[in-house]
Length: 364
Image (cartoon, rainbow, N blue to C red; front, side, top):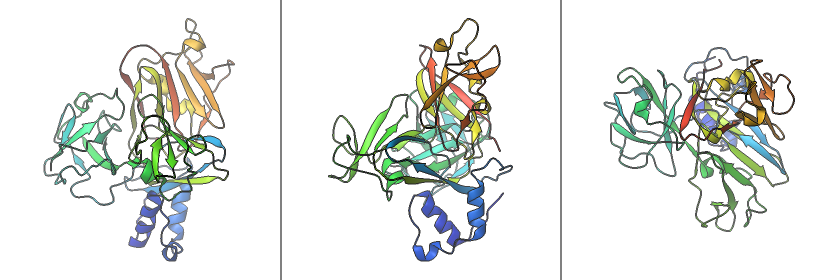
């Protein structure tokens, strides 16, 4: 499925990418093909996609409850000077160079973050954030989005062969501006966003007295530019008494999942692809160092995956029966559903520092 957009449709689509309402006089002219393509992306019937297939999914934030989401689509840069994709000339420990890239020096800012995604080779799907300083017209300094992310020059990138693309990031301000977020002057009564970027949760609310996002604890500073990791996810605690729709839109990912999983503690991993899947299809048990349940390892001592529906449900991999099981009864759970756009929480029992790389090939 490949979509050719008119200028009018592109305008409407970019509005949805930013959770902004298009001009109502223009919105009504959206074509049938546009609607049908978007609707189809939430189903597993997708077979072949081009790198430019675009779409969206709408997720409901239920009132007076906890809701779990992740950024599902790649957002292409909307206004950009220089190349946004191409062949990597070279990499250093924390930088990437592309000859003739033509970038504006330090184009990434705290208010408008960008990421580099590797799109071929053994590191396909790996993501790094573009630093906000010391970039040049041909070289980007990169920062890790997980404290345990390996340096880019250790990922087996084949210089002169492997490719990359630049994607636009989301912050609390850019993701939620224009939405009916329930803000107050206190985190005890407002909607709260919990972000798990580095293995621990940080929480934020919209403070109406200063019209900005603030941490729920600590120094009362602006959190408008807090970045939401595109490979992780977030929890939305909705205290408002009405439902809220979140629209996740962009280019449908055609790259594999390639994400660092902390060797100890928890890691929230993005749903990545805009279709429902199952626990068995994730192949998380193949992550290096994964501790499975077996005759010598009890379920409490095994690594776990948690899936959220209306509450968290935990699972372990049984290496004897070669299947996933709930942390309680010994019954098969390979078919447990992970909804489109929902992250999973991985909890590792180990004590070794660092991270292992979890991978999953594109499911369409």
